[in-house]
Length: 342
Image (cartoon, rainbow, N blue to C red; front, top):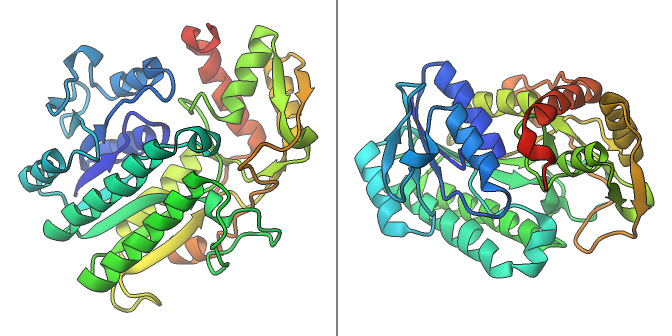
C-alpha cells in the first residue's frame, strides 16, 4: 500500500511513518517544518527515518537513506498547485493527514495560522483525495472538540457544538468538511479524536515535556487550575497501533453515515494531574517546584475517552501504563542533550 502521511516531522506522524515503513508499506512523508517549536527536534525525527536535514528543500522529494520505501517532501498544505502535483505524480492509495497547527493556547494568539493550515490546508487535502481516487482518508481530529462538557466519558455520539478555542473549532470544521465530501463524492474518511498523546520524541509544548525539562533543570513548573485537572494520557505506541488498524478499516456505504466515521482514540483512564506529576518526579528522582495558577483560557478540566466504538471496530486496546510510558519518555528525554538546554 502506498500512503501519504502529512506531518512526518511531527510527533505522531514520525512514529506512524516508522511503523508503516517497518511493515513494508510505501510511504511519502510531508511536513512544512515550521518553527512553532524547536526545529532541531523535527529534524531529529526526520534523521531517525533517514532524511538528512541538509538534503531537505522546499518542494523536493528526498529519498531516505534508511528506508528504501520512504521519500519525504517539505511542503505547505496551503500550496495547492504543489500538493495537486504531488498527488498526481505519486498516485497514493491512502492518505493520513496529521499535519496541522497544534496547540489550544497558541490558537488564541495566532488565529490566522489555524485557518491557513487547518482549514485551507484540509480542503486542499480533501480536493486532492477526491480527484485522485484515494481509497481512504484518515485525519487527525482532537478531544478538544468536546469543549468543557461535564458528561464523561466523552462519546462520539455526544454533541460537540460548543468549542472553547479556535483550535477546537478548526478540528470540528474538519469533521464537517470530511462528512460533506464523504456524502457528496463517496470519499471514505475517518476522523480520529486524539486524547493527550505522549511518549519519546513528544512535542515540547506538551505538559510532560515541559514538566520534565523544568524538573531536570531545577526550575518551577506551572500547574493550572491549582492542579485540579485530569487528562486521558495515551502512550504513543498504543496510538500508533490504533491508527494502523484504522487505516485498514475503510468505511463504506453500509456505515451508519455512509463512507464516514469518527472514533475517539485514547486510554479511557484519566489521570489526575498531580498524580501525573508525582509519577514523573519518582521517575526522574527529583522533586518538582510547583507554581499554582488558575485555569487557563481555552483549557478544559478533564478529558476522558470512551473508546468502545474503536475497540469494537478494530480491536483497539491500549496497554501501556502511565508508569511505563513516563519511564520510556524520561529515558529518551535525558538522552537528548538539547532537551535540557535553554
